[in-house]
Image 1 (cartoon, rainbow, N blue to C red):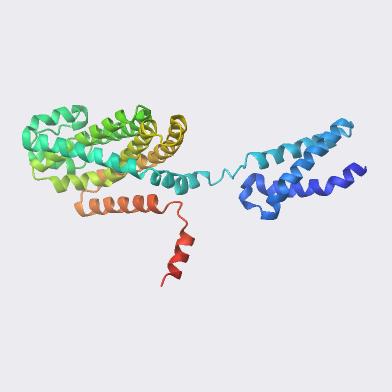
Image 2: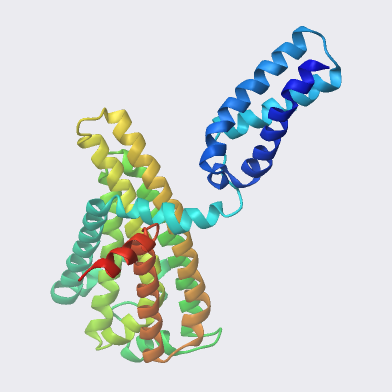
Length: 336
């Protein structure tokens, strides 16, 4: 059949391109193949139309329908490989989204720090009873202004399932769920001009400041920080990132700039959702450190080393993720 003989070469060429593009994405194609793909797709559509109108062999029509459908996926959906999508999200999408909202992240950090300073000043220098206004008794685990220095120290260092560490385990689990819910809620409520987001971040700072004031009053500040920072770096960092996502939505509502409020809010919500989703990994890391490392390691030096390690890899991840490192290295080599 002349119709089939004249077009089989193009169909075979299209098949070859699709075998590479569909499983791995268009990025694996050469420039010449990218330019040929839409032409071959339109040719396949034309062949299918002719085959249907002239009542040709049913097997040929079915083959062309399949070929055209697969080509449609490659041309119009620009599908990339599913394999590696999670890696690309965390290695590129998440750090890029975080860096896109540095002003909001700075504001989130500032609000959190203000909460710490306010509660620390009230509990430490005004009236210790302020402590109960900032800390839920269910999260305190018996730690209160009336507790002895020995008890507060034992909570930080004792091991075992009974006694202070039992209360500590309950506190650790409760704090993890509390902070995770605070972080994700802070992002979700950003649409309300960012006000609930700021309040939630501020409230979390108040709670932390009260704990710091309590332990500082008993001369255990450095001990507390060694206990807190290994899990606190990823956990508090995640809360602040979620807060930044919520504040970005609030900013989009209050000051959309040259765009419409809807367009600005959509963009901020999309970036904020990426940040909130990526922050879940930090909450999981914090939970693992709380449940394993913190319960078994009681040496202050090792605790601070873990805190430094977490701060280093998280900072490097957010700063260098998705960066064009080869181009950066090339610029360094060219520099005098």
